[in-house]
Length: 192
Image (cartoon, rainbow, N blue to C red; front, side):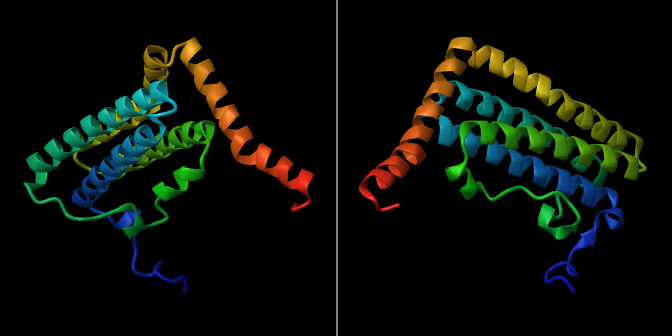
């Protein structure tokens, strides 16, 4: 048996309340991740940081809609259920890994997060029997699919051509100073 796997619930065994609770906690986590990306990028890449701030705000709006639906159907108490409690559910990379991620890797990770969230909402919408909840989950699936467009709009607003070019040059310079220059110095002095 895989350690920890036996303690996890299968997604198909979750009821409507647990699906909503999982969606709420996932939106909270994603907003935190986007805010962490923004904070990490703010000093060197302020335009990209603004994009991630906008994405975090969008996740907050999704969370608010989910909480409102939960209140109407199940009351105020939201059960604690997280991604790691569900077998086969997509996992997020630990936030501490972003310290070694390049700007392009962070952007790629954000795109993957949106695709995974879209897939979750599509599957969750099929699993619920309540029409209002199904509509909300379907709307959120469409919103997650549209996040690529929203991210594009945020990039156009905050990351115009000059800003993106400047940020790409900064990222390239950082790569050279972090990896290439020390490697060349090591080759020259014989330590590598």
